[in-house]
Structures are given as structure tokens and as C-alpha cells.
Length: 279
Image 1: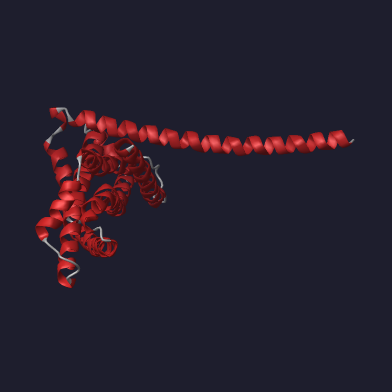
Image 2: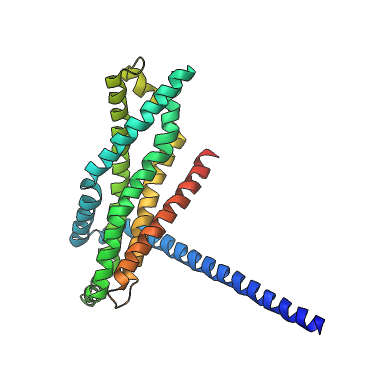
């Protein structure tokens, strides 16, 4: 009797363990499937963008409007954040390096903190919050109201007209916004140092230290961390927006899921790029 009871308990525990492992495996396979689909979309966009036939007038018009919304209209907000980061990071770095007698290390430290990590990361966050939500919501509404099906019926490829300009526009805008972020951060930080007269501030020496600390790997990291996550954000949000059904209640779900997946992809991509560039 005891053995039967122990056997029954053991079977229940085993079944519960297998069910738990099955859920983990199913979730992992689902995430891998989404990641592979996103990679396929990014690759397809890169391949199609190399074909001259892709660059029709309507496609270029959508691309221009995407760059206008994602890049130009976000410039003021990104500049404001960059100015705050410059005041905080540059002043703190200068203050503590002066106390330690290592003021010459201001360039390498700002390069490691701002150029490699903070600049691309915060810029991508702004792009995801503004454009990622807008793209998912817009395409989801188009799918629900039958506009995507209407484009297909008129012989217009939805991938070329809807997906490619948004992915390329987000990537190009993210890169430009990252450069603006870095420029405003360093200029704003230097002006703050000059105003509060923290140390012997020389504009030539300050920027020469920063430029001299930037190497080939930093340039590669900057390009990759601004362009690749931008393309993935556009691909993920387009995928979520066009993946809804016929119910309008799926629109906010698609927008939320697009933002969450884009943030996760940003962190994973940034980690992989850092490992490739600096290890």
C-alpha cells in the first residue's frame, strides 16, 4: 500500500515537472520563432532595398514621411534628454576625476559610458516609445479595416509599400538621432563645466581627449547599436501590427507587444554587439 501511494505521488510530481518543462520549452520555441521571423524580415528588407525596382515613388514618399516623424520630429526631445545626460554625466565624471587627480581620463570614460552604451541605448528607447507604438497601431488599424487587403487587391505589395520604408526609416532616423544625442551631450556637458568653472576647462583639450579615445571598435559599436536595433524595432512593430486579426481590440495588444519585444531585442542586440566589439 505504501509503495502504491509513493508511486502515485511520484507520478504526480513527475507529471507536474514534465508539464512545467513543457511550458518552458513551448515558450522558448515561441520566442525563437518570433526572433527568426524578425531576422527574416530584416534580411528581406535589406535584400529588397538593394533592388532599384523597389524604390518607387509611393515607397519613397512613405520613407520620407517615416523619417520626418521618427527623426526630425523627435530631435527636440532627444536633444533635451541629451542635454540632461551631458550635464549629469560630464560634470560628475569631471568632478570625481579631478578629485582623484586623473582629469586626463575624461575622454576614455565618456567614450566608454556615452558613446558605447548610453547614447545608442537612450536614443533607441525614445524611438521605440514614439515610433514603435505608432507603427504597430497604424498597421494594426489598417489590417483591421481591410486596407492591407485592399492594397494587395490593387496589385501593391504590402511588404514593399508598408514594411520596407518603415524599417529603413526607423534605422536611418535612429542613427541620425544617436549622432545628435552624442553631439548635444558633449557640447552641453562642456558648457556646463565652463559655466560652473569646474577645473581648467579648455574646449580644444576636452574634445581632443574624447576624439582621441574613440577607436575603430567604438565606431563599429556605434553604427551597429544604432542601425541594427532600429531595423529590428521597425521589423518587430510591423510584424505585430500586420499580425492582428479582425478584432479592433487586438490593436492595443499589438502595440504593447511590439514595444515590449523591441525593448527586449534592443538589450539582447546591444549585449551581442558589445561582446563582438570588445571581447
